[in-house]
Image (cartoon, rainbow over all chains, first blue to last red):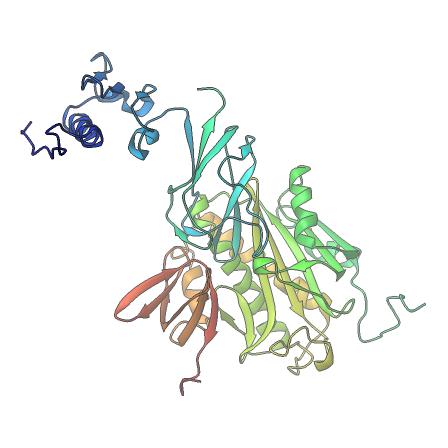
Length: 169
Length: 274
């Protein structure tokens, strides 16, 4: 890991926000370069700590499909990259290539929005292909964390449409 | 008795018994045919039937539909018995990514039936509007309900000019059809759907293996034309319709690029650009 330039504040100390930025870059670099699923990440600024724990080497790559819950403890809200690895997040994906609609018809309220509770089987949107309307349902109950696709946008097969934080992790 | 089905002799009622005798047979696709006087939407009725466990091949025909819906929640209405408004329940075996062909298959079936029985030169505007010239004769809308697909068809039969829902519509009577009797037209459409659906199912939904793509292109009014497409989100794409891909998407060449569309309102642009 190379020694990077550290912008200094007027009194000669490295600014906290810059330290944090540097730490995050280090974490990001470590996570990308060391193989195996990450079990936990923690960042501290006071004494400039950085802890990254990898899951035990019992089953290195084969277990990626059922990745362990990543416990993210950070000095500021976790970025999207960390959130995506959170096993408590359920991704509702497009069942086919088509056009995504957030509401049953133009002008109507959306099926779901950020912060809404959804039940398993509840419709979160529609994917249209050749005038075949395909309702898309959440498979698990939880809270809508993010709606990733805008109304009327094209979607690919398997593309994530909505993220739901499930009730039981 | 203003509501009597026989007040307008040009618009006789459909007979559920006669349709059932003609279409429901062992080993055939059609399992149950219901003719109802009046309903909100035949698609909604069959969606409910799916949830109640109805079998593949159920058909609901409405003499009058007061909440018929098209794409994007567009509604229309027509005088009783002046149109064919019906829906069919399918439980397709081919994988979901190939089921986008079902609405095209239904449009093709309706177009083939109208050409044969009514002798009207009808063609398909992508994905499945039946056009005579540039006037719309029929529309098709499909929706997935659980693992079933409900396909609804609305076809203008005896509407007069002053009864058309929009100026750009037409009817079999207005086009001087050889036959504008709803019973034989409906039978022909259902038989065509059955034939195409069986072939498509046997090919596991491969539209090339069963000849569906070639047959569809044979009656396409869109492919080969200069078009303007009103895309969802108020975007517009202008270009040349060059084909339909293996999934049924429209391929449009515009600005030196090929665009593949899954939804949108196509407008055929005349050669003079108007």
